[in-house]
Amino acid sequence: MSLPAFITFLADNAEAIGAAALATFYAGKNLEDSWNWWVEKAKLLSGYRKRSIRLNRNGAAILAVEEVMKERGDTPATLKMLGYGIGNMGEADDLAAFDIGDTPSGTTDTLFLAFIRHVFDIEADGQVYRVGVEGSEVEIVKRK
Image (tube, rainbow, N blue to C red; front, side, top):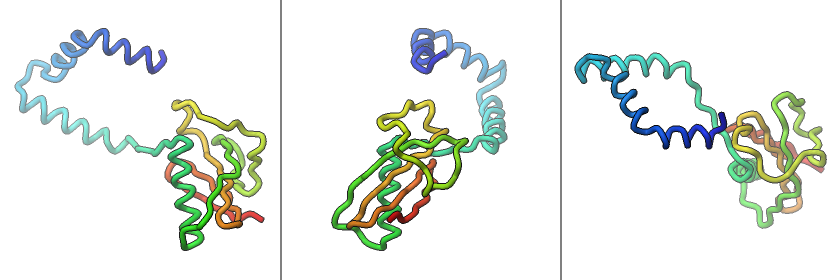
């Protein structure tokens, strides 16, 4: 089931889902007992959930430019994106050897953002940097 179909299902069946949720929440107990039980279970489950950042091209570009400025120690007078590519999780980690020319440019489907690495070639005041962004992790390499 796709995400839009799931949302449509929820919207079409809101009354039945709401009633089932209330019946599950109360389970024949008073409000305070039910609330405390659910809070306890939520605390148990929160340790298993890891929140990872999933960025599209624009969000990753912001982190990439910020990393270039941090590497330089100043704000460049000129800044230009020379190239953009998408790397997959299974590919080699060598950022300098990554071939931007063979990767698709443009938008990436939201479902795949957790599995890709954004790679940018950015020129700042004549110096070219290759920046890889994977979630909130950013790696930078100076290019010739």
